[in-house]
Length: 265
Length: 272
Image (cartoon, helix red, strand yellow):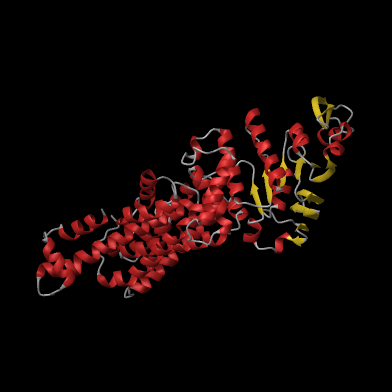
């Protein structure tokens, strides 16, 4: 069953459409990963299904209902979004940042409830930031900073978690940690994950479904095995990949430029 | 600290007033006593006005810095005070007999006009950069000051108006304070209530939206607050610079960057 769905969604201006009549489905309780080259519209799609961008035409459906017509606060209790590396205008402590995740549950001017505090503590614990609660974000390493932002999204305690390149700027170890955390949130808590990733091997290893975009259009979507094929990778990325199988999933061993493209400039 | 500066402000001056007299004035006022009269009609309104205005300028500084994400934002630097000043000049030329209520209206209009200019500039592509906004604000400010000075010169109002350009609390009396004070108090209360929302703006509009809040009304209220606070301040004491710029930074130095703490501390510091 699909929890989120786009129907012929176009985003951008008449002359310059970033997404072109895109129809995709996000199954509930699964990890769906968007792949595609830079500028293919991954981030735009993520922001559109998270209602941060309004489609120029077409509709986004959440649980079968038009996203645009739903209460923004109620939506914020169902889906958390982490746009590409958040930026703060001024410095905050980890706890303060994570506490923002409770905004959808709070009335203006009311203090944090015991439940709010519990969720904040839980999010900090899940992201391994215990002991860093009172550290300022600016004093954290890249990996810790990224985890603090994820903790904010976690504190929102939502059924759907939407992440735009959650592992950018991280080293191998921290990338893996984030991916394992995401996997755990999906497998043990049944949360629906939608994310954009550049690392195709991570995408293959951790996803249930892949959606490949190119030039704002759907190139191919389906299970990892269906999408991660040599032919598809040529079409999407113009690369010639050497694929092997590992743990029943495709793995890119190495890749090279593909010279068979029709438009080889 | 606020308490001490208030008391010092009332006691010290050309004629030193003992604390006891100040107390007597407050609880049991006799117009016949000269020192009590000084305290009542001159010192008290000045000190109260100065405290209110200090708080207002600091508050509008905090709001503007958060709204524009610009650490250099300040009603003086961005021309809002000058806008209020220009319309005040106009009001003195055409309606010299107007009461504090009317002057306030003109002052607000001027502040609003200048604030809209700043907003328009910061909406442009280049304007999103800190330096552009500040430079544009300074240019607007100079233009408006020049305009109001020119007007004053032509209309031979120079003497009466000079005071507005330099700023000072010497002219505050009870009549003005009762006319404009309520505006300031309202503006200050709203700023305090708005602080948690301003704090939220640090996340950037997109993330605030993803948390289910709308930034539009936060900006609108903040904007209105700035216009009222700056407008009323200018109508009372003229263009006093620097407080709005510096106080929020001093407050941040003291309590960290959290707007929820910066706002009240700034108001207190400004008042002192």
